[in-house]
Amino acid sequence: MRTLLIHAKHFWYKARQKAIAEAEPPEQAPQEASAENALVVFTTVEAEDTENPEQIVEEAADDVIDVAKRVGAETIVVYPYAHLSNRLAPPGEAVRILRMLAEKIGEHGARVIRAPFGWYKEFKIHCYGHPLSELSRSYQVKASKTRKVEKEYYILTPEGEVYTPQEYLEKADEEFRVIIEKEALGKELGEVESRVHSFCSKFGFEWEPMGDYGHMRYQPHAALMLDAVSEYAWTLARSLGIPVLRIRGTNMFDLAARPVYEHAALFGDRLYELWAEKKHLVMRYAACHQQFAMLKDYVLSYRDLPLGMFEVADSYRLEQSGEVTLCFRLRRFYMPDLHILTRDIDEAMKVSERLQEVIHREAAKLGRRYYAVYNVTRDFWENSRDKVVELVRRDGRPALIAVYPAGIYYWVVNVEYHIVDAAGRPREIATFQFDVGNAERFGIRYVDQDNNERYPVIIHTALIGSVERYIYMVFDTAVKMELEGKTPTIPLWMAPIQVRIIPVDPKDERQLSFAEKVASMLEERMIRVDIDDRDMSLGRRVRDAAREWVPYIAVIGSREVETGTVNVTVRETNDRIALRPEELLARIEEQLRGYPRVQPTLPRRVSQRPSLVYLEKPPRRQ
Image (cartoon, rainbow, N blue to C red; front, side, top):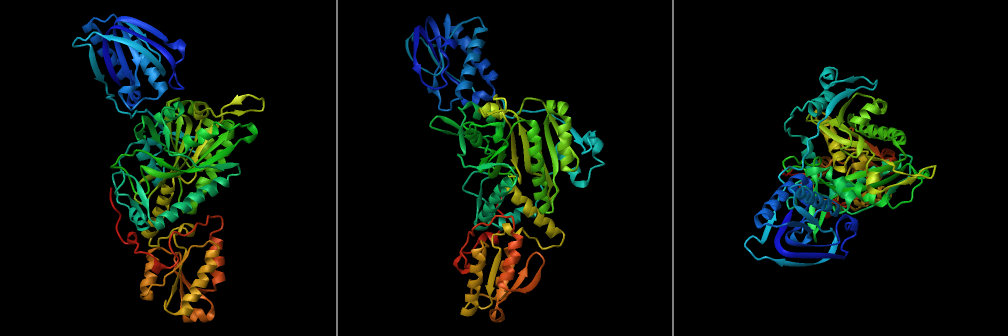
């Protein structure tokens, strides 16, 4: 908060017209007033003041009263004045804090006039001109944005039995025990170096050294995987059996908009903020703001629900610089965010059954299993225990329950699905939650069968987690393969290059022509294929393909040209088999059934590419 204090012999103002849409109603503050021997407090409420308004108001009020006593002012005028700072609080919060300031000053027995907020006003002032007649002040918030929330932890079994974490610890399997100890008992696991980071870097997921901490860049292999996973998330959203709309939106929102401010305030010190032309903006941390801003304009009936809206949203969270982790904990990442409007909690329960099926199925496809952490509000835990038990029963294994005070968040249930990675650390990947607050906050309504307007319950979900976290799980699975003595692989649909064709003699026109023919046939079916036509030994080129984890390496020599076959090495099984091109195509088509097909990010011929140094170098640290 910033103030300019003028001791005035005479002061008069009159409101002329509204300056902003959120201008204070005339009945809430006098539109015209005057005072003799007044201390006029021109006041700018800043964005930071909203973090701890009580502290700011008390400090400012004490200071104003002290100055008023020293100059002998009979009246104090609190006058909104937005010109002392370019970091303004949202209008609604500014009005609230100005009222608090006027009331606090009044508690000291002073006569107070508060001019209306958000109006163009004319005023006349006659400053006394003595040494204390013109003063400026600045007040800073001292408290942290972080708020401590007291939680209670329980273990809930699919049968509905409830245990304390300590009671259940001996019953838990090894991975669930790790989650209980970390999340409920606060056990510090320490930093453990993981091969995942090396694998991420190997495929071109890198820190951007010229950017902020926690910001990644995506080389061609990584960009392909990012696109493939993003499209797969959309495929899964469409498979749910409900109408889903795909949209795109902006990545920054104005905190002067009350719904944005109220929702953003829940994220505390993880907000990624910026200022532009006196606007205080927040970078979105998911697709919520954009999708809700659209949904509030829709005319919806109960017949339209459930209704989904999807976006792969570039998202921003101000994680601690020392805690960012390549492909996992980032300041900027991609969230395939799906919001589903449902009529009520009962319908949300029905829809969530399908979500849980998909979430667990997708983890199982990678050979992984999830353990759930249920964040539940106290009122929902006490009044709707049967619903929590039903959700856990569907998961098919015990869950850790964290019970929060009621009313501090917008959700009543927030489910986090964790794996335990190869380094023995819990890693949250997928999620869903039941939101009972944001429909009203953003003005999203539907008309029920009795023609009454109601607020829907909104399900938030990322079925496979953020794009980068899903890729982290894929690479962590590869680490586990390696630890078990197996050849590490990634799913065929995600592989940057699905087939590499290697002519034994790249100068042989017959071999190269056959290679091009096979490549064209595969490309017509949207299979990512390239040809290693470099003038180097066959062994070197085969090793390079293996280093890039190419699932199918197809070698073509003179014999293959004569027989019309390709000699294929399958990475997953290490088998070597002779196949006709049509047989290779059929085999790959079967493996890709149900998965997206994404255009390649590199030229077809390897000789036309620069040296991809990220395939060789170790990961860069931040």
